[in-house]
Amino acid sequence: MPRLWFALVLGAVVAVAAPVARAQLADAPADAGTRLIQVSQVDAKGALVGRPNEVACPPSGCQTVIDLVIDKLSEPFLFSVEFVGSGAYVTLSPRSIATAEVLEFGEGHKGAIFVPLHGRDRQQVDMAFIIVRSATVRALEPDRDADVLASGQVFNRKRAPDLTLRVSFAPPGG
Image (cartoon, rainbow, N blue to C red):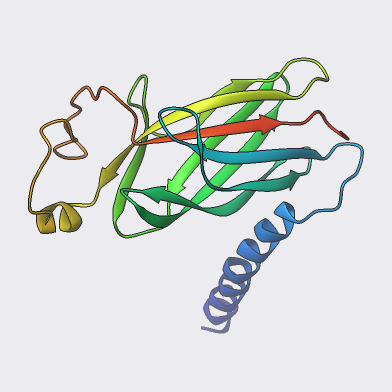
């Protein structure tokens, strides 16, 4: 019994400490391997929506919560970057009960999107996403647009993304 209690307490401490460590990654001081990443939401015409977010990422990557405007409402999302030898994997995850999934616009897949990073120049990429609303939110909507995803299992081709991010990667140490 004492071993089980110790394992439960230790697991709770690790579970509580892990988010704090992740949050500290976003505020890490600049050093030779740190990359400054700027994340901005843009509309269909390329105009800025809201304020840009800047994150200092250590060589391994980082996570931060950003607020994005979806259907004229601000919602929190977890923006994650993991650096690998030839680029970075970028993930956008919902942190609101209103959003069930975030899918990549071009292929409609969930999960990380690979961004190739070459050289020591600042690089900028636009990333488009589809937002899949949770079933409870969809049930409350009075009018349904025929161009909206019906469920998480059915993918209808959309003509325009729900969300576009402009992500700028500074070179390490720059």
